[in-house]
Image (cartoon, rainbow, N blue to C red; front, side, top):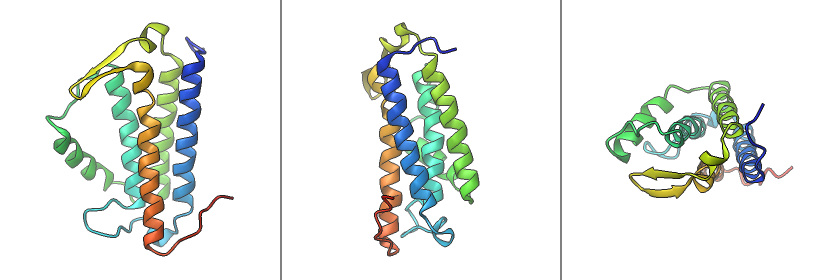
Length: 163
């Protein structure tokens, strides 16, 4: 049973759910022959975008929980992520990780205490109210979903996939 039914956390969960659904829909609208395609050698593929977002959900949750940042800088994090993302080649693999890490994150949100919600997250990048920091996950997913949508336009898909 959740520790809190804080309306603020319910709003965070709703935004997260919408962001995750948009990413899932973007990948569903990616043809099989474009799942592992990118416009350049340094760009992530649609599968890698989803794997990146899913790995980052877990990383941010750890960060919010007080687990020390395990990398010396953002370059080291990016290098590690790019190696891990390449392990994912199929839609099912990427979506499975996204689903697993999403479920874990929502469960974590459900169990935040009022004191945790009102706390401050201290990072090497600045201090953030935890109530604000927990919104970073949905924002991050939306950013990478936009990249998948842009990749779609590069290979000629100009359908907005609204319906």
